[in-house]
Length: 321
Image: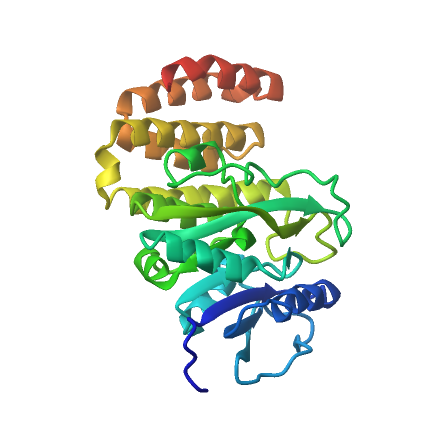
């Protein structure tokens, strides 16, 4: 493959069945005004091998990887990341779509912001394509944030598919966590710990579907989701402890609040073991708060109810602000 004067962009699409939607996502990458692109399809053990309807050429290289078992979105993105050769990397889910100019406009923004490691754009939620103009914004992606902290403690303002990463930032962050839920939050959290800067294109260039179809890499029941989310939070905590952010008072308080709410959600769904895993994190960060929460939880444990623990969730807020 000949070397282009323009930087190579690696686009990674994890796929698990729902091939009709995947075809549309792949087509939105083919339709990009920008070249060269390296498209990496990661088939996460679909019922049959997914074959994209596109062939490699000089400026559009296609590669397919197939997992031998269903490993989830984090592991799928990591399989693609390890194969990626691009100067920039993007992750597009197999049910989402791109505007034809998303890559070219994000690269232009990067050229104006050489210190930035990630660029995102405004995104909307769609039911059908093309959009009508009445769709709502995805989260707060219509606002500009130049850093990951503290905004992600209030939820990720952007979706994974709306982001383009500089390769150097991706290498800093390292492997995707193999969790099935909040693996993208974990990735952004680690970017925040590294003080990776952000730039922004204030245009709707990414479309997230409301209807995910019958197959989704992370689809599961609520209890399993909570257990997987707890695993991601534990992974985030282990990473945080290794960074300078661990001694930052504001970061510590925000992280304790995040873990606290996860603990309460676990107890509300009758997952006490997961709840106490979260409390153990708080105990390491602030023993006094953790012991107080544990005592109250143990007190009400014999009569767990949504109403009772909902009241606990409300009353304990004053201990963690």
